[in-house]
Image 1 (cartoon, rainbow, N blue to C red):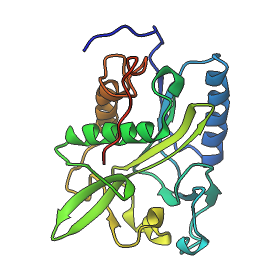
Image 2 (image 1 turned 180 degrees about the vertical axis):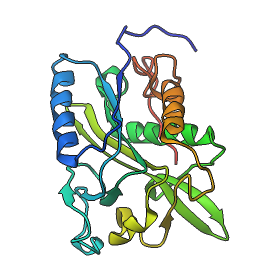
Image 3 (image 1 turned 135 degrees about the vertical axis):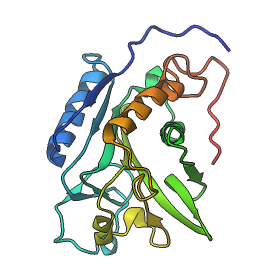
Image 4 (image 1 turned 90 degrees about the horizontal axis):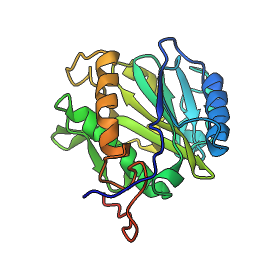
Length: 238
């Protein structure tokens, strides 16, 4: 299907090599969101790593913070519950103007999941959605499934921030200080835990290559740059 779209510029990309302290990333996102809202800056996808820390989303429960003294704990302001960030985990913060696409938060989260699924497919990993919980899951056999990527977003005047964390080669024992995303009956995994010793650069390449398939001007989903054609609605299936 071909249809015309406004000529919005593609998002900028920033890849940080050094570990970024969490308050620095929050301040950076806040500033960029304001600039995008006021049409003073382009959209931005920021790929980074944090030092070891826990973040609490707006639905976090105090009893899910099992080791409060282990790492610094920050209120994130995003949706979701407790999650861990640390070295070896690719964090992606997306500052996108949904008015340039489709102003629908559920469709946006669904698109984030789709992007991660496509990126994981580049490594022959089958990432899957679950109807009762956000994020990307990997079936391990014998009824076991582990989470490989978490998603938590915030939207202000239809400009997004926060995003996802994809486990590449983090220390998985660090997740033991929390109940990740409030889900105790399933575990966590990483690409290295699955036997795929890929580099962060390779993961970034997969994310860069698959982003336009979901968020680019030629994408065929609801988060394509320019939005859905008139009369077409966003339908989310899980």
